Image (cartoon, rainbow, N blue to C red; front, side, top):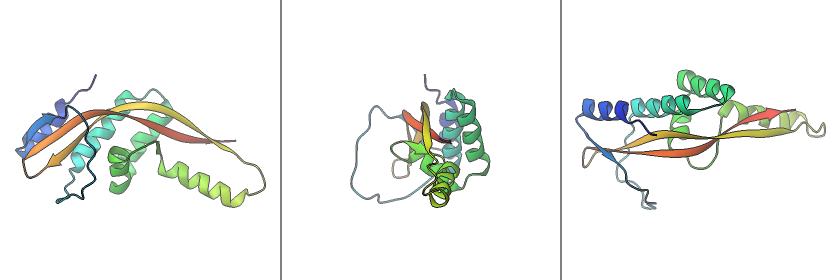
Amino acid sequence: MANFEEFKKRAEEKGFKFVLDPGYEVNTEPPTELHLDMVMVDLSIKSAVKNVKSESIKQKLNALLSSGTNAQKINFVYGAGSYYFPDDLEMVAQRSMQEVREGGICHPVCEIITTEICRCILKTEEQLCREIARKVCEAVCD
């Protein structure tokens, strides 16, 4: 079950109203404003860490939290589809360049992880939050 207490606290710190998003609407219109709250992004990653079962994925999420770039963190929280850790993708790319004919194969090992995410709506001063599930994968190579 989702726990939005830290997100509510952050919204209050900013003077925003916390709103639990009852559904998800796809909007293809370009945004009229772009605002990110990196504290909320970090809270989302911390939430995922609490919910993950795999110790190796937990370690990679903690590494993302402590040393990932802001862009990498944003991609984890707000990206769509299956998530692959940047270091794993780099490793697979390097192996593919070095082992064209050696047959080294990597396999994804994935887990569905739930986390809370929030979007800041400046116009209405609301923090729109919901729980999501996302497939998080790590690459394991032979």
